[in-house]
Image (cartoon, rainbow, N blue to C red; front, side):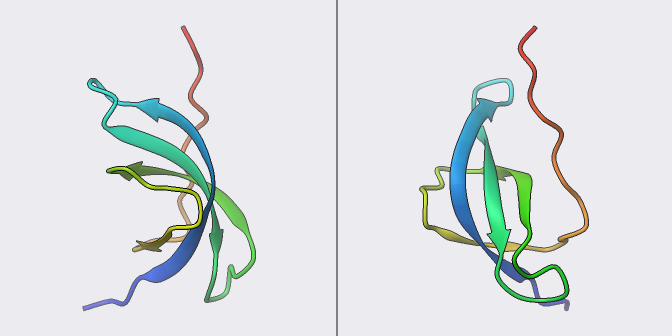
Length: 68
């Protein structure tokens, strides 16, 4: 089993998904080779600014949500 990488939620950006259940956040990687980088990720649930989430992969980054 692979260990995840902790990341702190820096900013809440948008809600997405059919029912608004996905939240797009900017998170700062706290450990590993990408430590200190800020990445855009999609998170399911209700994250708050300052929460620490565990990312299984730090290489991927979510696309920006554009209004239609």
